[in-house]
Image 1: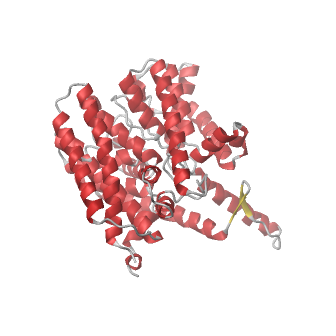
Image 2: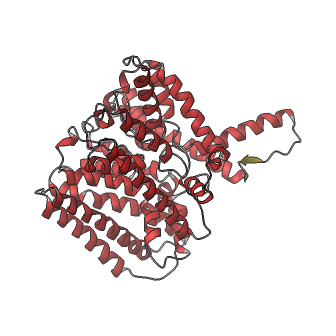
Image 3: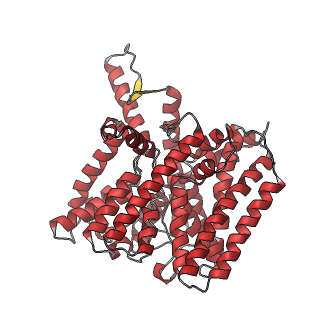
Amino acid sequence: MVRSAVILNYMGKILVIIGIAQISVVLCAIIYSENEVIKLLISALITIMTGFMLSKTFAHNHSINYREGFAIVTLGWIAASLFGTLPFIVSGHIPSFADAFFETVSGFTTTGASILTDVEALPKSLLFWRSLTQWLGGMGIMALFIAIIVGLGARANQIFRAEVPGPISNKISPRVRDTARALWLTYVVMSAVLFLLLWAFGMNIFDSLCHTFSTMATGGFSTKNQSIGYYSSPYIQWTITLFMFLAGVNFALHYLIYKKKTLSQYWQDKEFKLYSLIIIVASIIAFFGVLHISGGEEKARAAVFQVISIMTTTGYATADFDIWAPMGKGILLVLMFAGACAGSTSGGIKVGRYLIMLQRAKIELQQMVHPRAIMPLRVGDRVINDALVINVLQFFFIYIFIVLVSTLIMSIMGLDYVSGLTAVLSCIGNIGPGFGLVGPTNNYGFLSDTAKYLLSLLMLLGRLEIYPFLILFIPQYWKE
């Protein structure tokens, strides 16, 4: 049985965390002497007080079950997105709720799709909030919740399992709280290193911080209308390329390498090797699709940057890839179906799932030759059971089905096929830009409110990897 009081209590605690995060936006407004200070303070206080009242009104000390874990995660993300709109709405810079909700969901889910036609017109405090939502959502709001809330005990496991449902386990320690803390520590340390590098290579402190948040989260929000293309420095672009790549790797693997003090663990990981191979091959193909750049290094930089940006679902751009040759655009479209590694901050289907499907296909072919052979499916040292293989295949089918149905709906709303398909792929894959009307030099602001709500739903589905969201709509889920 799902107890609503338990869910509301945890939602309240989550809102308190979001409200505290909004206080940092107030501090940013104070530092830059902006007129929005009082309005932003009001939005933060509304969020904190609502969260405090929910957590106190529905206080409890009971364990939570697996079903409640799903509800807490899904409804917690929705609540964070709803209250995350307040800085935009209360300040008056994005007065439309549909627009503010789209922008906020895009932030927390690390999608990076935007309704803004002029990003640079926003005050720095709201630019900071956009980037901060991505950084918080990157490693997971619930993982942060588990890491900092004392006394969860075994209850943390239900929440962690619901937010991180990928095909490959991310557990570093038998204690889920220790795992969440280790992942967030790795995330914070890597963020600090990236911030210092961007600052050293010429970005100002504010832009360095905002782009650090967006890069490590594979989010893609920028403080500039031209995205990373605004910065002509090869050092800045290559640095962001490297950290997008690293953010697309399983953070549990990063932590393991830190503990063992050896890089060899990377090459022993099959998912990492396939991830790297895809990027290398795709970059070579994309290189020959970049026709508007003649310089060798600049051309290679543009190709590698955009391939990694799409593969990791970051969504940054250094140029308008919508004008690339068909070969270059084609490989980027294929990568929109991919995603990076399980356990990373990226969205999409994930390389780990493709690895399992490829291994399963390989075994099927081998068993056609040797019908009596027993061939366990392995990913590294781990034997993958049939239940997990079925889960992966089901996820892939549901993902593609949602893409097809959503593309049809977008076409009914008037979008051409290319714009509709890539808008859907970009939102459910948490990528950001697509092609055509939603290309890297355009935005999503022209869409109807209905389309924005649909795409916002797809962002949440993609970030939560479908199951935790859809399960709430099964009637039996709510019954005892």
